[in-house]
Length: 397
Image 1 (cartoon, one colour):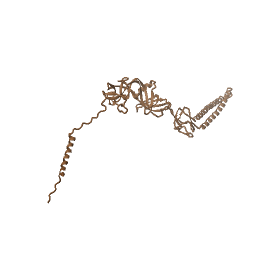
Image 2: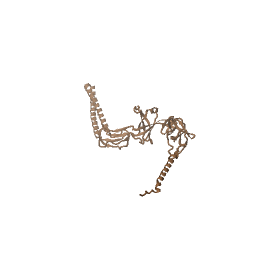
Image 3: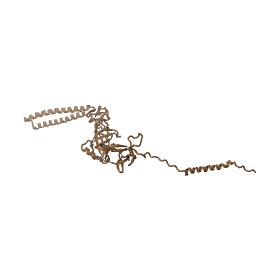
């Protein structure tokens, strides 16, 4: 029986080397993860540690118009549907759709033949009764002479006088029939009752028209001048009524939907006689010449009613005004730092507001850079902002 062969020496050393490597890796991991001190986190520097760049503007001394803003609807002063006043066949249409017409201008004609016949009949009847009246008047003159000669009885004279009066009444009725026939014949010529702009034609030549046709032939809308109706809250009513009662013509401006373009200028003409209980508003009407047709019927417009004008008022941009627990205020600059200045505001209009207390003309207030300002914060006044800088933007304090 033979002895087993012993393994080589290199194979016996491999497990020992592997254990040494594992121990070395564990020691390094323990040193770097547990023993080594953690590096301090990087500190992010604030971009606004220095003075805040701001833009300032001067308070101005100027006349400030106090305005009431509202939404209005353009309404024509007159809108007429032209209808026929007699029945008949529409012989001709003499207008173009959409054109302007003057009052009394001929628009259409209805076949006049039947009405000329009626006029001739009325005139013939009148002529016949006129001849009878003349004959009766001649007989009455004879009867009066005979009665004076005591040749006829009184009753015969009175009978003849009654016949004359009867024929005179008949003649008056005949004249009325003639006048009515002439009027009906005149109605075959359809004329414009008012001046204005025509709408779309609603009937064509050759059709039969009647007096009861609700659609009519065409509509006419008066656009020069034209009105605008709008409403104002009742809290603003006293100032408007006071100015209107004093006989002042309050200017009114009509602007487009985006309030980018003024369309027309007019004056306030009418105040309604009662406040709407549901909305607490009062309806008003203004009138505009509208010579360039900038205002169109039923168009929605933004209305600015100028109630009064503040003379020599101290004004600043509305964006410079800040609101807080201490009331309204602005930021001013003193010795390179922001200073909070309380103010009392008056009326505002557009982009400017009147300051009743707290500022005087030519005082400088901060307009841009307000979102980073606090009392005592260091500032630097700039005149031209960088093209792409988001720094100088109007903001709240």
